[in-house]
Length: 91
Image 1 (cartoon, helix red, strand yellow):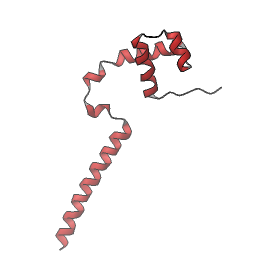
Image 2 (image 1 turned 60 degrees about the vertical axis):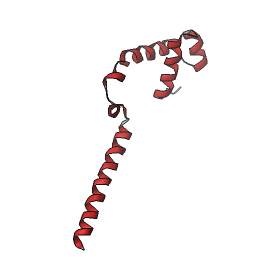
Image 3 (image 1 turned 45 degrees about the vertical axis):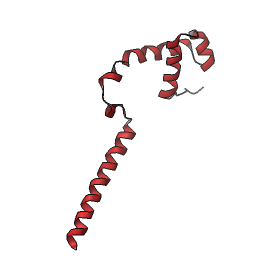
Image 4 (image 1 turned 135 degrees about the vertical axis):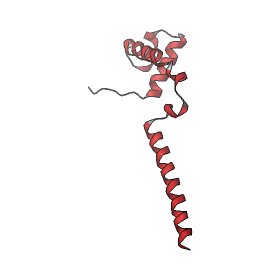
């Protein structure tokens, strides 16, 4: 049997449902096909890191891929300005 991998958005969805306390952990576990201990673990991790949402800026909340994309776009912009400058200098 292979290990299942869960996305951060799925984990957040499950944790938020658990925090609402409208259903028991057993009911949520059955609904999402998880073990109740897994939900408890995710809930604990979520609550331990919740203060980070307010400590870090928007820039730090970007995924590494988003940060890389932003860096590359900045580089492209700089190279375009430099290229335009050099074209004008040759005229």
